[in-house]
Length: 365
Ligand code: ATP
Image (tube, rainbow, N blue to C red):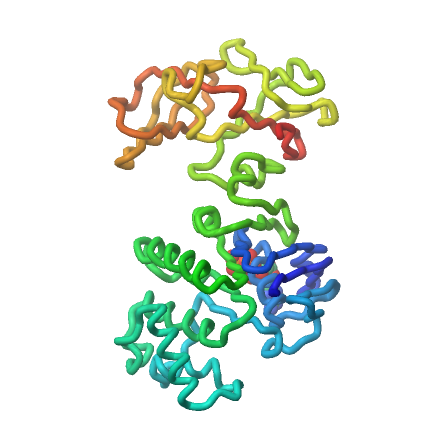
């Protein structure tokens, strides 16, 4: 079994504490993604699992072993770095075989293992080339091959696709998902790209400033963000946030004010929220509709003027200015004849609304 359990991890560099009491449980065979803005501590956390950083407090368990003080080579983990870290003077075959140098395998067994990995990654024709004669995507495959050949309990990927162009990134994303399925190994993957996180993860850990903000499946985080930070980080384009006045709060519902003297009652419990506000209404661009383009009857329509239209082929993103001057984004599938300056009605449903208090805590569940 290759669960990874992080308990109460603190890490301090000089005077800066970069991880604060981090608790994370990664299941056996799970694809877990650590996501968060630059500098939030993703790589440090990953390196702590690998044994390349020693935590100042807390425990790292891998499988049934307390690995906190184990040498990296004895943890049963293999890390794939953003920079690939291939040896330039070695061929692809030698680079992949290098991962087995500490094993007691015979030459024939090593050759067989390298061939098997090369077949999985479809790099057989490249085995006798040196890294300088490979494209970025091919180098990345070799780096992954070097990890696979060691048959680790846990794979650690640190932004492995960030040096590839957009098309190759999408292709490699799918290949990594297939590889995970095929190997059935536990994989931990670091990225700052929420689309990568959403498409690849069984579960996602959202980090901010060295703290875990939320752990959940991609859908959990999308539908039920704990707070405004997670709500804004997950989803593209970003969730719209509008400061709104509070009109009334009962146990399970909260009535807020909207432009044009309208109000809306949303399923949010604001009884324990700071009554001074401001309260912030969150609506994803895909949950706004132009005219009646929401799934089901709209609860409110907001008058707006179109300022920019982005045509993406299968969908459009409309930037529109509400009556009170605030800008929102609306995302719709398909095409629509619409132009800068058009007057539109933006439809929304209470069921799609998120409400946050002044601290950013989600009041809708
Ligand atoms: P990015 O997405 O930019 O790679 P990250 O979320 O992976 O960022 P880390 O690389 O873990 O973040 O860095 C977290 C914080 O720790 C940063 O403020 C960074 O400057 C600091 N840091 C990381 N490694 C060291 C080190 N060896 N010495 C001092 N500070 C460090």
